[in-house]
Length: 523
Image 1 (tube, rainbow, N blue to C red):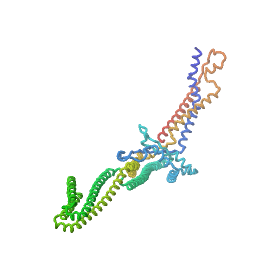
Image 2: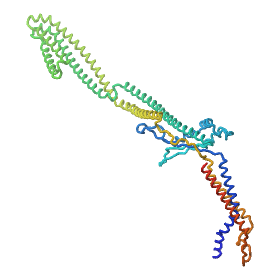
Image 3: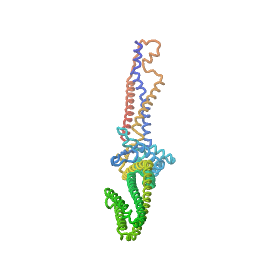
Image 4: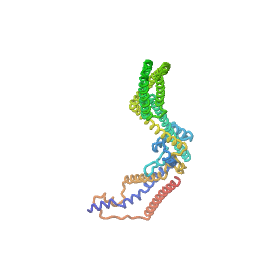
């Protein structure tokens, strides 16, 4: 327990370290001051480099997106990377280097590529993000040995960013509009070709289209009605022909009947029967049609002619004088009958020809109706492709118009743009070297160097400075001690040594503090 206590006491022997400080303060202060002085002095010897910076704000479009939708990608970070690569290209940087005469004195031996690479290292782009992590601004920095050159180059880079952004957005917007215009032209050609196909199809199949179904049914119904009317009229004409043929035969036998003296000829009774039949037929037609109907008018003409024939037949068979008159009227009546028979035959031929034409029309319209489902399917196939092309064309037309409006907005600089929030600064203090920081680094190096030199001297010194060191060397315990007998000279010497130590420490610390203050003020 006693040994442990002695060990701890030895570990924290303050007198021992105070003695080392008294003996080695110059060995510590001189390396400390020299180390600090070398590093601090280097900060004033090294060529200064000034850093100029500007803050560029990313402004959103002034027009609401509900009115004009931008046609440029909203990925600002990607666009900034593209713009940065273009600005940091060899051509752009060489132009700035030649215009501003950069690296002319300090890097005369450098090639053009080496100057470009050095300028790229001197440029720094720093993105500024909001709380949601979106880029809403960015800083542009440039480092040069002349503060005014740094400011001028930063201004040039800022203008390049602003102009390049406008050009990039405008070019991309115009490219988008041109692409949509080309797609719209292709869609227009496709739509025109399909319209021509539909037009040719409709022209080739007139009367067979679904839209004409109702009219075809109405026309077919009307033609069928006309066909029935013509067939009825043909039957009537054929009956009339039979009647006229029989009447002609009767008139030819009229001479024999009148010469036989049997009274009224046989033909009168037949004519009366025909008149009754015609009148009955007229009554039937009158109940269905008006007097202006062609069949009614024609039937009336037949009745009038038949009545005339009966009068002639009656005159032919009346009295003795009628026998002579009959001989004269019979040929006239016979000629009229033969003329009517010829007219009847012409009528029958016309009716048959008309019926044949009407049957052809009926077959034609029935064929159209039969083809209608096929044409409907074919037209539906053509129309389906046309509707799809039409929808695609309308969509492209809408997008093209919106893109054209967005391009116009970009040309008027109403879209997303960069605006200088903080003008390029004129640096008053160099960014490198940071003399205050060098002062701190020199102080740290001086402390380490002073501790190392003082420790080295202390370890290499074989003299004894304390009672404990003497006791450690003796093999037996010490019985008594002779105190130190100090003279006045010794006291003065110790006092002078202490004063010189404090003076040296004051000078070193004061010099370091003064250098630090000077570095802070002059930077």
